[in-house]
Each structure stands twice: as structure tokens, then as C-alpha cells.
Amino acid sequence: MSGLIGRKIGMTSLFDENGKNIPCTVIEAGPCVVTQVRTEEVDGYNALQLGFDDKKAKSSNKALDGHFKKAGTTAKKKVVEFQGFEEEYKLGDSITVEHFTEGEFVDVSGVSKGKGFQGVVKRHGFAGVGQATHGQHNRLRAPGSIGAASYPARVFKGMRMAGRMGGENVKVQNLRVLKVVAEKNLLVVKGAIPGHKNAFVTIQK
Image (cartoon, rainbow, N blue to C red):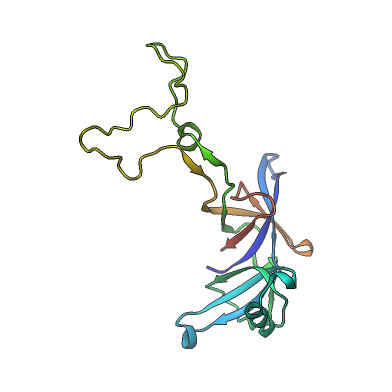
């Protein structure tokens, strides 16, 4: 699917024509530079590699500097490949937020907020014991029995337990584009998207 790289700005809300308040997310989408053109003859598939957001020269290396120099651009912080562009683009071309139109639906991918080591109540939605009777003490948020005994004498893989939460690749599908602000490279989509403020995201048609 064709798309762009963007940065999550934050959340706000808009009123629709019926006066309903709609929660939405503002994304700085593009402009993205075409840093490589993949072709069927050379690479075995057709795709465009896009770069977004300049980074300092000291943070790059010579291999990357040479790669971006071919496209006539500076080193970029984020590079992603996209397929399915209908238009023909050349090395060094810039693709803006106008690639999207109001009313269409997009998929947004990003890395969710890291929440550290969490227990089963927060991580998996366990109810906990609560203020129950029957001699319960100091077990309000404990996981309880995990089912292992002399057989199977082990803990099955995938058992829901406490552990690291968040920091995973998440894709939210079918978000409606509410607004395209071309002069500021802003895209406003309905609902929430993964990631913290200023996190990189990819927006796909």
C-alpha cells in the first residue's frame, strides 16, 4: 500500500456537521523524499523508499551519506519502503500530505508507549481477588494458580503473566481522514494512534 512517514503531534477533537464531538489525532505527514526506487528488473519488486525528518550530519555515517547523496538530499532519521504508488516518482522527488484526501480511510502503524514491567491486572485485564472473604489477604492483584502440577510439571508457553508491557509494533486500521492541511503538512485522522508525542508513524492507504 502507498503511504507516507509522519510524526504524531498529539490529540484534539473536532465537531462534525451534526455537532458531534469527534476525538482525533494530528499527524505531521511528510514531506517525504524518494531516497531509492526499487524496480522489478533490479530488485524483483516495485517499491519506493522514502526518507523523513533531517538528522545531524554527525549522527550519520559515510555509507548513509552516500546513499542520500544519490537522491540529492540530506541524511534522514526515518526510512521506510512503500509499495503501490500509482504515480511515477524519480529519485529525489518529494511527496507531500496531499497524497491523501479528506474522507478516505488509512492504516497507521507505530510503536506503542512502553509501560515497563506490569502485573496481570493491568497487562491482561485480570479482575484480581478484590475485597473477597475466605481468608484472602494481600492477594488483591495476584495472578492466582497457573495450573501446573506434577503433570505437566512445567508452565505452558503463552501463559498470561506479569511482564514487560507496551513498546510493540501496533497497526490501527480504517481511520478516516478528517482534514488535510497542506500548507502545514498536517493530517487529522479520527481516533487514536499508537506511540508517544513526536513518535514516528507510517500512514498507508
